[in-house]
Length: 109
Length: 112
Image 1: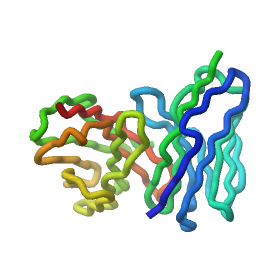
Image 2 (image 1 turned 60 degrees about the vertical axis):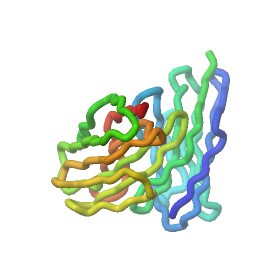
Image 3 (image 1 turned 180 degrees about the horizontal axis):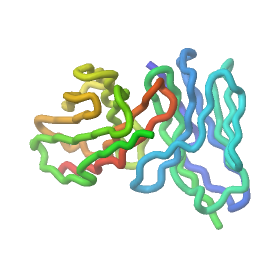
């Protein structure tokens, strides 16, 4: 099955700085790559996604890039704010979702 | 858009007791349904998925089982809970292909 690896496991940045989270996947059949944000004790919420026919997608301060050849994709958050502090999960999917292990982002005011 | 109802929100059960967690979906028909478990501070582990009534696929061997008695109902069960079954259980749903899960609010299970 698919194997998704996510790095780093924890990330601490100063408010206003950028944050980058990286994921790799193993199954070349995967064609959909969503990112989820999970606040403590709550369900994961979809924040952005990208399909395999697209190399980059941006939504305000959040962007995702995909390199299908290298089988890796990244989440970029610019101008970070304290409310961005949460655990972020990447996932790779063909017909089922396989999640990375998560990155705990701490944005220091 | 679809809504997932999941209950109970929290549950404390003794080792060896049975378990039944229920998930129901509104606002769509014939969804794909999934059960995930999240151990404390860990990622999301896919346990079961279902593409239709009575169709259950298991991702990992364990003492849990799943059933889908109705199109929009997904049940996670155990006959005898283990300490290692503690975690945050999430039901998820997709429709019209694999694009974008909707998660239920989760059940926090503590086995004591």
